[in-house]
Image 1 (cartoon, rainbow, N blue to C red):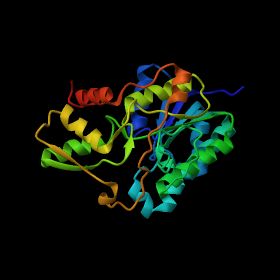
Image 2 (cartoon, helix red, strand yellow; image 1 turned 45 degrees about the vertical axis):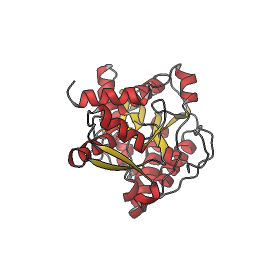
Image 3 (tube, rainbow, N blue to C red; image 1 turned 135 degrees about the horizontal axis):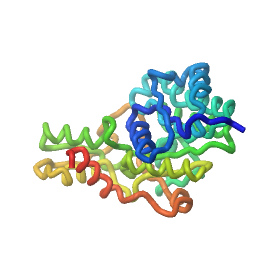
Length: 289
């Protein structure tokens, strides 16, 4: 029998989702620990093995990733080292020390051409380096831990513990009265607090396999930005639509990558709340309300 020293280890604990997870675990009085790049370089297998041997968690939640979509295009080796090889190293440690693993992934593994919301078993077709590195990370985790992995895909994440789209829009709105935001990419804004609660629930239920987890409802980045300015009381700011092609970014993006959460709902009994409701709470909390 494996002698676990703690329940959860959050890898990438200083990122937006990782920090929120640690906070919720502490508030729930669930034994947990966190590591980030300063403590463990997940691109080095010996470092990962040493850390896991010392901490002996029952479950590892991997939130560590390079999520800079444009940056990945110009640094593909680093992207694959962190987003593919890193999860592989964690999975090998889980295999050696008897841990389970929850690994975070992304809607970007899809090409956005389905014409509807993606289910977990839909074929993937990652478009850019970031997407391909994340898809490879998923594959390596599944191969190494066929019976003890849980992969969660999410999208459009924002929260209190890091830079995000909401803050970018608010900052821009303080400086300009007219904003241009793409209106041909569709998805579900997801609040890190709600996602963290869902991840803990999946861990406690010992969920296995792949799940899509986002806040309920869908919009575009333009719709999201419009809701942000309206709810923040910035009625003087005009949010105008533009196309992704007009944005002229080097990394390709899926245009319709909304995720179908049915499998998560069937397992847990309830969906995450509507994205507009979650956004209202975030805006209230960030203002000290």
